Amino acid sequence: MLVDQRVLVFLGPPGSGKGTQSAKLSQVLQIPAISTGEILRHECQSGSELGRTVHAVMTSGGLVSDDLMNQVVAPRLEQRDCEVGCILDGYPRTVSQARFLRDFLERLGMPQPTVLDFAVSAKEIVTRLSRRRQCVECGKIFSLGAGRDALRCALDGSALIPRADDHPRAIRARLNLYNRNARQLRGYYRRQDYHRIDAAQSPDRVLHDVLIALGGAGRYPVQKIAPALRATAAY
Ligand code: AMP
Image (cartoon, rainbow, N blue to C red):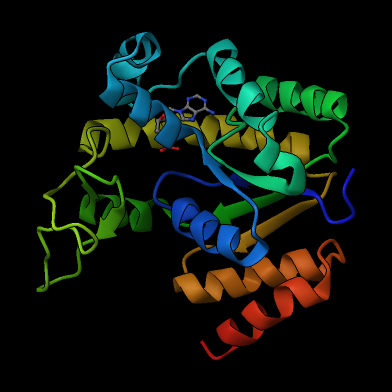
C-alpha cells in the first residue's frame, strides 16, 4: 500500500454535487475520479452490448444490477492510475456493492474507503436537477441560472440538453430508491471512516468542508490539502 493511498466513496442523492466535488477533489489530490453513471452513459452512447442492456433501467431512474456494476468497477480499480487511490462517485449504491468493494479492495491490498456523505434536502435537489443541462458532445454538466440561461456548452459550443433521467418521474424514482438504499449504506459505513457533509452550501464551501474532513481525520498529508484549504477558506 502506498503511504497516502486513499479510496474515497461519495454518497449522496442525485443533484447533491458529487460530480462537481469529485472533479475538484480529483485535481487537488491528483487521484482519478470514477463516476459509474458516466461510464454507463458512455456505454449507452457507444451502443455497446452493456449500453443496450442498461439503457432502459437508467432512463427509468432504476438501478443497474449489483453484479453488472461490480463487473464494471472491478477492472477499473485494477488500472494503474488507481494505485494512488481514487474517488468513487456513485458506487457503491447498495450494501451488496459495498461488501463487494470491501472484499475487492482487500484483495488488491488497498485501504478500506473513507466515506463522504453529501447531504441536501429533497426540495433543493428537485430545483437543482430541473436546472441541470449536459453537453451533447463532452458530457460536462451545467446548471442554468435564472435569467442567464446558456444553451451552448462553455467548453466546445455544443448544444446543452437535459439528462435523459432528469425528468420529474425519473427524478422521483431515483430519489425514493436512493433514500431506501442510503439508509442501509449509512448503517453499513457509519462505524467506519464516515463523514457527513452539508452539501446545500456553495461548491467552494463544500470543498472546504471535505478537505477539513479528510485532513481533520489525519488521513491526508496536510501539505497536500493545505493550499486548496487556504484557497477555499475565503468563501
Ligand atoms: P449517476 O450519474 O450517478 O446519477 O448515475 C446515473 C444512473 O446510472 C443511475 O440512476 C443508475 O441507473 C445507474 N448507476 C450508476 N451507478 C450505479 C450503481 N453503483 N449501481 C446501480 N446503478 C448505477
